[in-house]
Structure formats: structure tokens, C-alpha cells
Amino acid sequence: MSARRRRPGVIALSLALIAAGGAGVAVLLLQVGNRTDVVTVVRDVQVGQVLTEDDLGKASLALDPAVKAVRADNLKSVVGKWAAVELKPGSLLSPSQVTKDNLVKAGEQLVPIGLEPKQIPATALVPGQKVQLVHVPAQGTTDTDKTSGATPQTIDGRVVKASGAAPGTGIVVVDVATAATDGPTAAAWEAAGTLRLVLAAPDGD
Image (cartoon, rainbow, N blue to C red):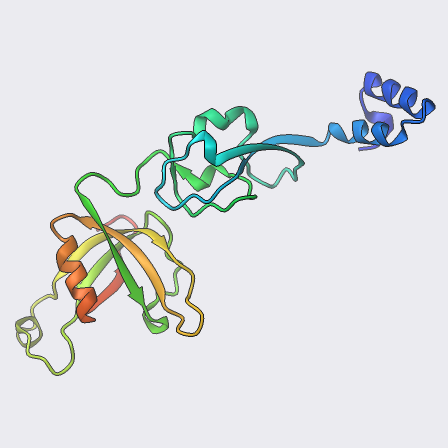
């Protein structure tokens, strides 16, 4: 937007400052109309952590309309909510990065699962995604499910966080929330290398 289309009061003040030798200040004033006050992240916040005012700050930026960011006057509305993704200092906070629902609910346990590159689904794993943990007997062992053709044991779970691929190995660690009664079983399958993760249907069926 050109200076001719700005508010008359701002233009008049800018011209007065230019006449007084304050050209730099005048340019700053002409840019103020393009800036938006937004919420920023000022310290590391882990997935599932409750946001506090100490985690957040404010900044005035020239923001592209396509960028979705929480406005500064809405800061109070995100305090007390849970981080849906990992938040890093210096980043803008967008509405999709917070949730009103605790990612790990009462009566649940968090089970970390390491996936090798060949075990990682092509579909990106995102917080809230429903999955099934499947028990696959180790090769060379005798298992009643394997010999009888019965349906393998499964545990329902929900993705809380998926890490990036580890350098060198490509292993991705996925934190999965399960019922507290199933957590120890899932952890034992993981330790024995007999656990596989599959995506559940979108409707959870």
C-alpha cells in the first residue's frame, strides 16, 4: 500500500518529522499500519505440556495474511491448553499447535516405540492419530496365535508424539498413549522386538 493511501493523520505526522530531520522515524511510522501483534513462543514446550504465560511472548510483525498465528489479544485464550506439537523458542504460535484436550488422559500410559525405516508408515504420524499395536511372534519361536491362525493380539493406542528420524539409523520414536492396563504389555512387546505399529481406520473402527 502506498503512502498516499494511508491515514491523513499518520501522513501529516510523517511529513512534519521529515521536515524536522526525522526521516527514519517517519518511515517507521509509515510501516506501522502493516504490522500485526501476535503470540510467540519464548521457551521450549514439549508435546502434551500445559502452556503458561511464561512460555509465551508477543511480537509486532509484518504478517502475511496466509500465515495463521494467534493474535496477541488472544494470548489468554491459549494459556492452560496443551501443546499439540513440540514448540521452539522464536516461533509464532498457530491455533493448530494447541489443543483443549490433554493428549495423555487419566487412566492412560505413554509407551515409547522405536520404528525402523521399513516399519514407518508412508502416512505421516501426527498427534491424536489412532493406531494399533500388534504382537508379532519372533521368528523361530512357537506361538499359539501363529500356529492356530487366530487373530494376533492387538492394543489400541493414540499417537502423542513422533520424533524425527535419528541420524544414521533412521529410527523414529513414537510416543503412544494406551490404556494403563495395556501399557506394561506393550512395553514388554517393544522390549522383545515383537511389536508392530499399524494405523487404525480414520473412524476408529
